[in-house]
Image (tube, rainbow, N blue to C red; front, side):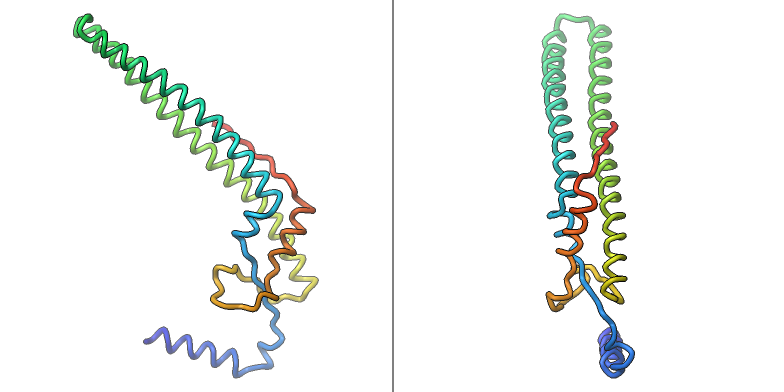
Length: 177
C-alpha cells in the first residue's frame, strides 16, 4: 500500500509538471538483442563455442583413458599386494583430481574470456550510446528489461547494433587455461 502511494505520487509529479518533463527525450535499448544480433557478439560466441568444443573433446578423451585405468586397476586388485594396490589407487586418484582441476580451470578460463569479450563490446556500446545521446538530444536511455511499456519508436537498439557492426565487427577472444 505504501509503495502504491509513492508510485501514484511519482506519476502525479511527472504528469502535473509538463514544463519540466515534456522536453525530456528518452530511449530504450534491448541489450539481449544487441548481444544476440551484433557481429561482435556473434564472433565472440563462435570463438567461445569452438574453444568449448575443443575442451569438451579433450575432456571426453581423457575421461575414457581414466575409465580404462580404473578398470585395469580393479582387475589388478586381486593379483596385487594390498600395499601395491593402495599405491596404484593413490596414483589413480591423483590423476582424477588433476583431471577435475584441469576441467575446472578450463571452465573458469572460458568464463573469463567471455567476460572480457563482453566488456569490449560494452565499452564500444557505451561510446555509441553516448554519441546517439548527444546527436539526438536524449535525456536518458533505459534497458528494455527495465521498462514495463513503451512506444517502439524510442527503441535505439537497431541504431546501436548497426553502428556497433561498423565499428566493432569482430572481438578477439583470448582463452588461457
